Image (tube, rainbow, N blue to C red; front, side, top):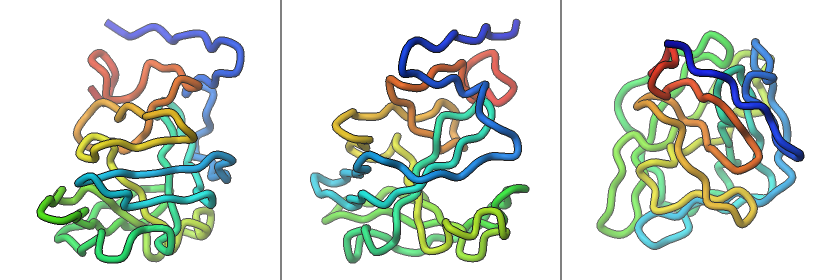
Length: 164
């Protein structure tokens, strides 16, 4: 049974109004990632990818990631819009989150601005923030979107969605 779309309220965006192919845009708010009790990423220069049915995926410049917080991990994946992604373990002290971050070292031309940027899965982190709001991870094991109060779904990856 299909999931019904949630109508956006004032100041909200529906992920069903996001484009396909996806759009890349700058983020006006601060983006932070906390893992192992440590801030591993903190940026006011983040970019977000908006794609139909997905909450935004946030990318931060590698320069805004704490030294030693990322270690290359095995494997890669392919996105028809962005190209080939590589993965990282996120490390803080004695904690390690395997393949919890990714980047596109040589993205396709439309997404060239995310070269040198990295995205984090919110689920394995202690917390991820957009502004002062703690995000919820996009449902599903593969998806990396961050859900905030200003986006409504249903989101790909939820039960009843084609990615659920």
